[in-house]
Image 1: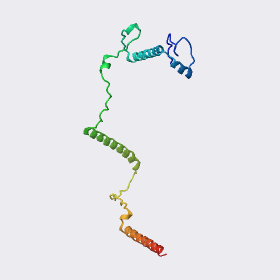
Image 2 (image 1 turned 120 degrees about the horizontal axis):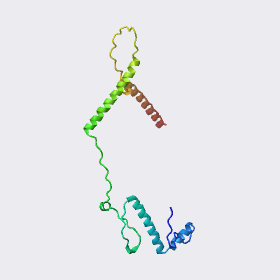
Image 3 (image 1 turned 90 degrees about the vertical axis):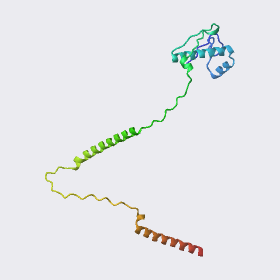
Length: 183
C-alpha cells in the first residue's frame, strides 16, 4: 500500500522526481524535509484515517473548514461522544438451585436405571437356554459372602512369628557389634 505523491512537495513522496527506495536514501531525505513537506504528509495521513473512520462509522458530518481549505471534519454521533467508555464487568458465577440439582440427580438415576435394565435384558436370554425337560433341582442356598482378606499383620500368629524373627535379628546385630568393639 503506497502513499500518494504530495503535489508540489520536495520530500520522498513528491511527484516531481522519482527516487530510489533504499533505506539510506529514505533516511537521508527525511532529515532534509521542510516543515511544509512534513505537514503535507501528516494531512494526507489524516485524510486516509478520516476515510477509514467514515467507512467504519457509516455517518459523517461535513463542516466548514477554517480559512477555505478543503478538509472535512468527522464528528462522532452524540450518543457515542456523551457516553463514557466503561469496561465490561464479568458476570457473577451462575449457581444451580436445589430444585435444579434434584432434577438433574433424578434424570441421571433414571438414565442409569435404563442402561442397567438394557444390559440385564441383553444378558438374560444368553444365560438361559430353554431345555425341553428339566429335572427339578433343589433351590440353591443363599450365597455366602467371601472372606475378607485381612492384612497378615493383623493375624496373631504372624505377629508372634515376626516378633521372634526381629528379636533374633537384633540379638545377632548386638553380638556382632560387641565383637567389633572387643578387637
